Image (cartoon, rainbow, N blue to C red):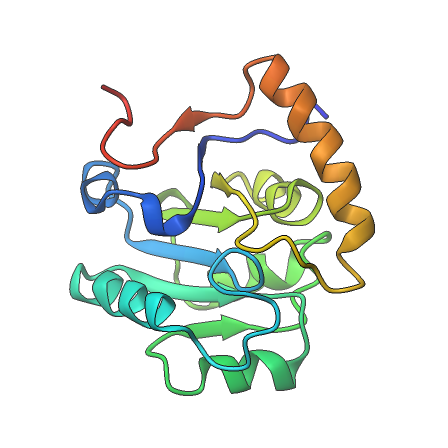
Length: 177
């Protein structure tokens, strides 16, 4: 559990105040797709996800969607969005994501990585030494492949919460004040 370092936490990526990105010099937002940006059962982006991505673009923040999901799922979802994406990311191993960042001159120090799972999202971010924002899953319903990880995730979150290791809360305007 000591390898799972969380820098920030909030209920949802949609709760983070725009000011947070500016004050922390975030230029790249690397965000998990399923349960972080949208429901795992959404074939196309919801209005909230579209609006969020467009707002990030207006703020000159580069958005990269990272997913362990299939090429078909990720391409269909991202088709009309002004984003880059990595499908079949194999996040537990981090090599594919790290290579993508290097090949595209994306600085890890200027990036914020966002996800809803400790065993995949947080683990790969810790391995590449990035800043991690942990969010709650958007829906209670998970796909079959995530259910086992989710049960373990809940246990680890409880321990981390008890030990005050969930990172700085940044939901809304209350962060750091």
